[in-house]
Image 1 (spheres, rainbow, N blue to C red):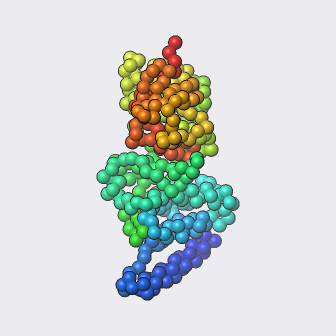
Image 2 (image 1 turned 90 degrees about the horizontal axis):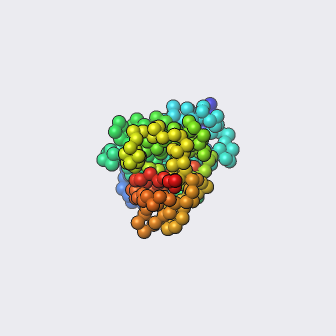
Length: 330
């Protein structure tokens, strides 16, 4: 009841603000009938009262009433209810830490400086963009979208009502709150990295150096820098080794391979990578920033895929590479 009461008051305030804004527009000779409709107003017009309450609780109303443009993926009321039930959060009684968390989650639904329509997303097909949420070292978190079956975000949230336009942006209503992404979010949501996920899971069945799946899924772990081999990279390795699947190798071997792709306690962006030695969990590899390559102890060279770098999660960053790095061969 408190949330409903607070939201009704918020709606009344917005109506008052709209009236003042319209009068101000007239006074500034912007012409009769000219009215600013922000992405916040669009959310209210679509009865997204839970989102409105969350924006007020975290001080983001004025931000999203700014110039923009903003692309907002706005969770439905049901989506917010699921989040609050799962986390036990009370928007009327947030601690400082909880408020910061909810604020960052909300910003993970906002893309600043661009007005992305559903047709823009469909035309691209799939890819990564940055949200206003932040992770390690203040880096903006990434958002992965695919459009093969509607618009899906980070493999967990689907657009149910697209292209609700505002004067300072556009709002797409989604059916699930988009949680802060981890490295696991991006490896599991992008089908082009599915063999890497299989490798991590297979190594976990043995005695891995680290429990891979739970570690990359842990928002509080890291940060890590992951050089992620693409599916094509793994297929080439299988052909090179004359085997059909990674499970033809023992888990210890797969574990040793994986360790050469992970840098611990570092969130290295592509422009921060320096030519020279890079120390991974398994040992040293070398980077060449002139050619944007990595070389393993066996002199195998992998290109860093320039269009798939700086995929930022809350627990680290992913750079896709086109060749699997191997530990020293005895």
